[in-house]
Image (cartoon, rainbow, N blue to C red):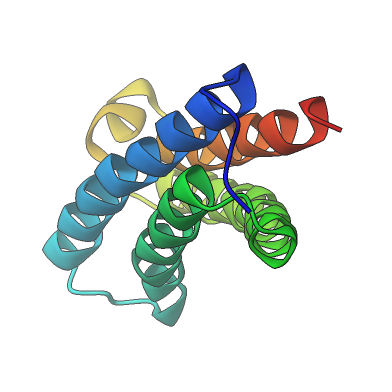
Length: 131
């Protein structure tokens, strides 16, 4: 039920959880600024706090069902980040001038959904590392 000390898996799960809290704040500000003009903008805004809460719970209670739930959430995060990357690259491309450098600078941040995916993969590494 409880962890035995602070193994690297537990520390990584805590880090991933806190990272999702911070990414969630940032993505909410960016999507709010754009008035959530596309319904898919709500996905990371809703997912990030759920990932944070699930990870924090798993950090303190090493329960099998929480581990399975966290794994499922991280797989959803991987897929969501990949879909978000598509939308962000597409969003840059539909701006006047297409994929010009200035549109990458002022348009949707193409690296943020990739960070969503990367942090999700780190969460998966943490749970699979422990076996």
